[in-house]
Length: 330
Image 1 (tube, rainbow, N blue to C red):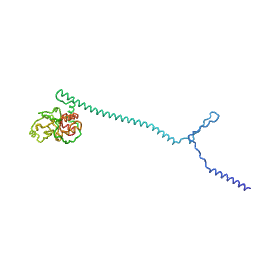
Image 2: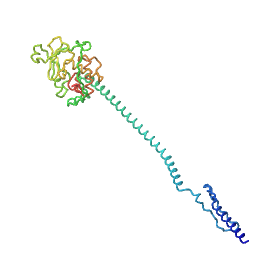
Image 3: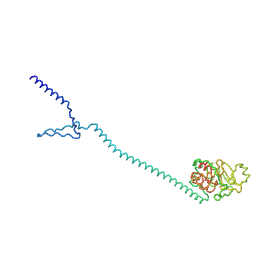
Image 4: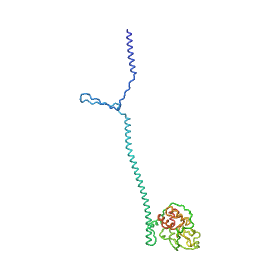
């Protein structure tokens, strides 16, 4: 009997131990986190009794936002504000810069156009003033005089102040053998004729014009005085002296001359080739509109005179050294 009781007790103890071990090995259920967006409810006030202290429940750790979340949200918020603020400012500054640049361009363009218009107006006024003054002086005295603008130009010319053009290489032109006398009629010889107005042309470069006077001599006289320094243009003889070609009146009594006066001979080029180079240069600048024929007739002399007035030179109406230097030929 005692043995039976002991067995019963051991069996009961074994059952208890086995049950406890099985309970320990059973997996525990996972704790469900509380939603972060549900705020804690305030504790209910105790029923009855006045003057009881209000009880509040402190938020749990799951309800508090993480510091990293606060920093990220603040960064993106500040970035959005900066972007919104900087975009209008950028576009506003860009618009102001474009307006200022356009205004400056328009102002510069207007000044340039105004300057060009003023130059053209001044040039036209100068030409009208010169023509009117020359006509007035001629009507009063019967002798053409230098206008006021020409006097200023002559003062500069006397001091050697010339408008220098781009250098031009002299060319050799194939010229007609006979001149067109309809466009350039021959001039008549006048013994002792001097170049009108030359007494007012100052400076050593114009001394040849001040000293020139027409002379008639026979062929032997010209040969004895100038030997081989004589050339023929359109059958007419010219003699060389002090850098200029002059008509040798009387060498050939029926010789044709379109101009009775000196013609500057750059590098001793004959008068017709020098004249052709001047005609070509004046054509390029819009002064001469005739044919390049090597004849210094009225049309060519008029174009030379216009060029000389516009470039501050004495109006000699012929080919002189200052004019060739201004054209860039000499």
